[in-house]
Structures are given as C-alpha cells and as structure tokens.
Amino acid sequence: MLTPPTVNMNIVVIGSGAREHALVWKLAQHSTATLYNYGPTTNPGIVPLVQEIGIGDVTAVADVVQWCQERQVTIAWIGPEAPLAAGLVDALEGLGISCIGPTKKLAQLESSKSFTRQLLQKYQVPGSPQYQVFTTLAGVEDFIRSLNDAVVVKPDGLTGGKGVRVMGEQLQQRADAVAYCAELLSHHGQRVVVEEKLIGQEFSLMSMADGKNLVHLPPVQDHKRALNGDLGSNTGGMGSYSAANHSLPFLTAADIAAAQRINERTLEAIEEEFHERYKGIMYGGFMAVRDGVRLIEYNARFGDPEVMNIMAVLDTDLVTITDHILNGTLDQCTVQWRPQASVCKYVVPVGYPDQPVSNVSIDVGQVDTASVQLFYGAVDQTTTGLVMKGSRAIAVVAVADTITAAEQQVEQQIQRIIGPIYHRADIGTAALINQRVTMLKQLRHG
Ligand code: AMP
Ligand code: GLY
Image (cartoon, rainbow, N blue to C red; front, side):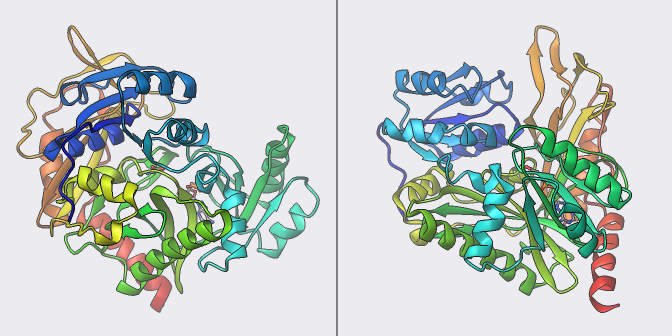
C-alpha cells in the first residue's frame, strides 16, 4: 500500500451538503493533506475541518477553477452531479488539478439516461429493463401498450430524482403516461425514456473506479419516500443502512456479484467506447427482481445519504485511496471495512419536501456525539444557533454490530434533537427490513 504523500497535497471537496461533510470528515481523519471546501453555502460541520471555504455556485466553472488555482489546489473531489455535468472536471484537469469525478462526456452516465441505456445495450451489459428513447410522440403509445402499461417515464436529463413517474404511483393509466411523455417532449430538445416497470427491492451498489480497476463498496439501501411506510413524496433520500456482513438482508451473494459485474462491464464499455479513464464513483441504482438484478440508473458521484454509511464503516485512509484512484493503481489498494452495520437517518424540517418550514432553529446540543456522528446538510450557523434551510437538515449516523443496534442508537439521539423536525422512524427497523425480505422471497419463490 502506498503511504500518503506528505508534500503539497491541497485537496478541495466541491459541494456544501452532508455528502460533502462526510467526505471532508473522512479525508480529515488521517490526512496529512490540507483540505479546502467550495460550495454554495457554508456548512457548519465542514468549517472546523478545512483551511478555508469558498462560497459560490459550483457550476460556475471559471469561478471555481480560479478559486482553486489561487489556493494551489492539487486534487478535487467532486461531490454533486451538477458540476460534473457542467464540465468542472474538464476545466480543472486542463490546468493540472487532478479530479475524482468523471469528465463532462463521461458524466453523461448520470446526466443522460438515454446515453447510459444505449451504451449498455451496445456493449451487451446485462441488467437493463426493456426501454425505448423517444424524441417525438410517434410510437409512444404502442410501446407502452406492448409493456402492458407497466411503465416508468423519465426525462432524459438530470432531475434530482424527481422527474421520474411510475405507473401505479404518479401515473394511473396509459393516457397519463402518454400525456406525461407529451409534456416532457414539448420542452425544446427534451427526450424521454419509457421503460419497463421493475418490481422488487432497490439497493445502491457504488464502486470506486480508477478507469481500469474498481473497488466495490458494501451495498446500501436508501429510502426515497418522505414518510414512514414508504408513503409521501419522493425525496433525495430520507435514510439508509448497511449490514455488518456487507450484504443486505434481502440480497443473495449472487445478486451482489451480478451488480458488481454490471459496474465492471460498464466501466469496460466506457473505456472501449471513449478511450478515456473514468475516475470517480460509479453508483449503480439496482433493483433485485424475481430473476436477478436490474440496473435502474447510474449516478456519477456518491449517493446522499449512502455515502455516510460507507464513510462510517470505511477503515482505510481516504487520502491513500484518492492517490490510488488518480494513479490508476486501485488494484494495489487494500480497502478495508469495519465488519459492522450502519444506519443513517436524516432529520428534516416538518413539511419536507412539499411545504417545509424554513429558517427555524434546530438544537443538537444534547446529542451524544460518542454514540452517533452528525453530518450537516441544509443548516446555517447563526449567532443564535443552527437554523434549518428547508431541505434535508442533519444526518444522524451510527455504527454497531447489528442494523437493529445502530438503528436504536440513532433513534435515541434523534430524541435529543430539538426543533420542528421529522424523521423516518421505520428506517433500519426489523419490521421494515423483514417486510422487504418477505416481499422479495415471495416474488422469487412464490
Ligand atoms: P431515478 O431518477 O432513475 O433514480 O428514478 C427515481 C426512482 O424511480 C427510483 O429510485 C425508483 O424507485 C423508480 N424507478 C426508476 N426506474 C424504474 C423502473 N424501471 N422500474 C421501477 N421503478 C423505477
Ligand atoms: N440517494 C440518492 C442519490 O444520491 O441520488
């Protein structure tokens, strides 16, 4: 294993959310590097961990680049998807700043659903649902009918997870699906992907890639719905868990191997198609279905909240891993994970995501930080304390021998947080997990 370099390592983490707080937190643990942060807001959790915070729009590429140059930044970790799609990596690398995150072209893996579906089809990567890409309404209705109306309609670009409509949820009948396609196509240049609705259990399998080699991370399950019982609107993710055996209670070893293989094959396809190294995170959103696993989508960055589970159980120095990613030597890097489970729950302002209260205070002073780690999201530090800004506020993360124990630790500490907050009490409970296990068992074995 390489020892972390000690000279001239100035690392910037781009982005201001809890995902970026978790990245900075991990980099700061062992690091001999000097850390910086650049993003739209000052994250109070990041403040004590970095040399300096730059405030600005992360898609204003020229501004970010100038700021990094002035600080002699040598390495950039890109947290969110928007700067990847805006070409921040291309600009930084053009000036010799190495990046963890793909170039604009390769970031289409996330920013264009049709790009990904077509790439996977061309290279015969298994796991795609049936799909078609449409630029006009011609053929849309026939295709939906051919799938017995069990479809999902997606705009082609970045949607923040919110533009997707699923039959039986946001869509009730064929006419709704056609109408939504028409609405999306009416936006100039918009393309729409219609695909088979998959039935099963979702999980995230993220891998770190150096262009050639992959290190697979333990699978994590996120919970997108706002309310207990998987009710309410879709959100960025209300919480997540990972298991001590680095599987998930509803997955088989074959499921995990299949998902890992899809990430590997996709990396090979990218290399063959573009002759360019994909450096960064390949985040496969998978569905475990009746007869195996399917790929729902790729993201080109860490999941939020999933990254918090990963960082909480990652034992290896992230600066060392960073070096291996940049050098293309991930195959020589032994990445070690604690054999423990993790649970992450977001506390959010009451009413999130549809009508959140905003600019209201949240008090975490009573939380036992030996029991849980707090990662700050949409909160500001004011002279009178922390204030919630309307989105996911604070992620509460515990690591323990079992999912149940970690869940209880998180719950105990959330009870000590004061403010008009909501969180999903069911994430990580045996009751919800058993439901998922039973659902998939019935699907697979009747
Ligand atoms: P995406 O933006 O692709 O992550 O989609 C958002 C959510 O829509 C996913 O997390 C799934 O819950 C759901 N979804 C997307 N594609 C499908 C599909 N083919 N079948 C069933 N559900 C899907
Ligand atoms: N956990 C969902 C996302 O990061 O997109």
